[in-house]
Image (cartoon, rainbow, N blue to C red; front, top):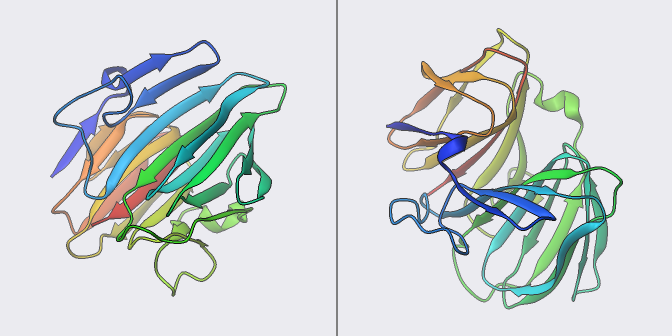
Length: 232
């Protein structure tokens, strides 16, 4: 089953400094049919205006992955971590027993990012944070694992859930195949470009919810940058 969720029909909230689209129920947006997708709980497509951001606030028992696709985001937290994550790179935060953090766009341009929350396999984990620059060439034409709960993905940022966050860039006309692990669901969103998933037409920022599919054939109609989460 593949369901295309058009960007125009997503939940939305515009706070002036933040323009957010919600793929799943979040804050004041509620859709009983879009609470989660397996352990994937949140996928927000956020545009943050220059020199603005999320002031310090708490989280617990959630794996929070941020994929920046324009500009940069600067992080600070109660564990003493500070860092800046640029376009094409990723930061992870395992909130575990509790952490307070802030996320600011300190740049002179808008920052655009995917904010992804995954429910951890167990509660009460030790909070952690990390960010990493990934060689962009490694995701040209094939999926690169950016964050993972599997030890064999040693080059990825570690998260505390049996899930993966992957990304790929494709030139127009280029295609790739991906095999979904048995029993898992997938969710895809493109930061840019039009493409097809198993023959279904998809536009940039649309959600693609996948279940009970073993193989995905992805073909780019335009140059595309796609992020995918694979979860139980």
